Length: 112
Length: 115
Image 1 (cartoon, rainbow over the protein chains, first blue to last red):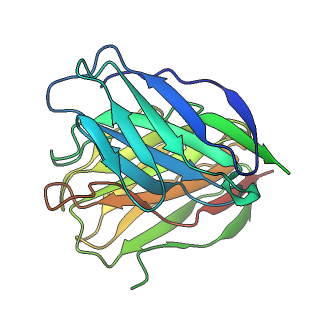
Image 2: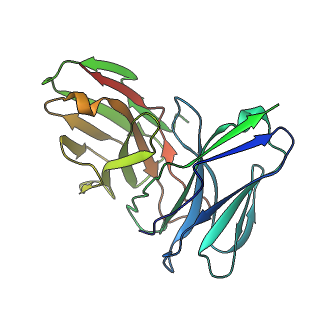
């Protein structure tokens, strides 16, 4: 499984756009990139997933360059409720039993 | 639709005691997983099951056993609890191949304290 590297922490203010970049130099051909959000005392929650180029949903956008060695999670106009830990994971999610390995994630702190 | 249900939510054990953490999903998912999360840390994979009848070790399997009872249920057993197993345990499931959204669905966790 490809290892990922992301910043330990980030700070932002309400209303700003936040971009969290994740490095995954050893990503394999069949690997997808998935981001999760975790609030204190809760299990992680799926945010977005992509394979290449750009993916957008109602919560976030995911930008993946052509070489796929990195990805950027973009959160538009963050609010206080976006304060959480964000995990970037890489794995072949279409194969049975793919076991995702979580790192320490990026702790995002949003202030007013 | 309950998703992934874990029981109990909280548990205190004495060193050496045994217990089983229960996990059930109602989404007809094939794969199920057990993770532990220690304070300030990410999640670490204990065991997983790609399908009914199969289980595999993850990053930190020592001290644990698992059973994939059927497609819905995946239990985690501590045979002789140790203080080092004090943690929050999360169960997750995944649909694997299918339409868009291959993400895991997590339960709300079991907070275990071993004294």
